[in-house]
Length: 79
Image (cartoon, rainbow, N blue to C red; front, side):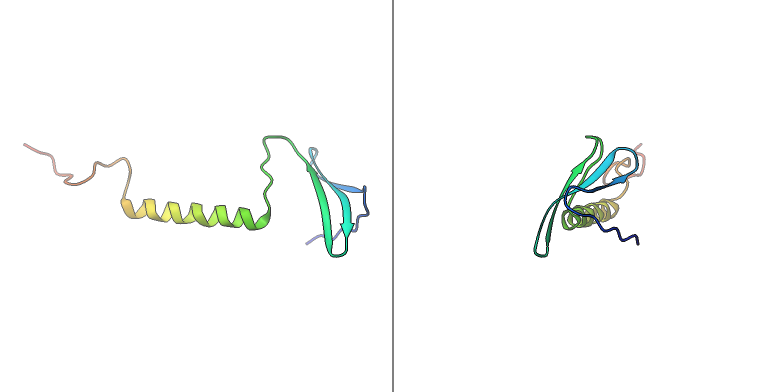
């Protein structure tokens, strides 16, 4: 893990096109701004974890239903 100390107005870069700027510090709260391309999704960690858990649950329930390419019910050919 990397620890970086920044003051208000200072920033750090992630790659060439993502910049995180310290906008404000009040007590134990830090306000950040994130400048990023529209193609990059930025989420709070707790929201990201919720979406990830829902996606895992959805994938698991799809596995229980079987292969979506197979017809439902009797798979034996009819004469």
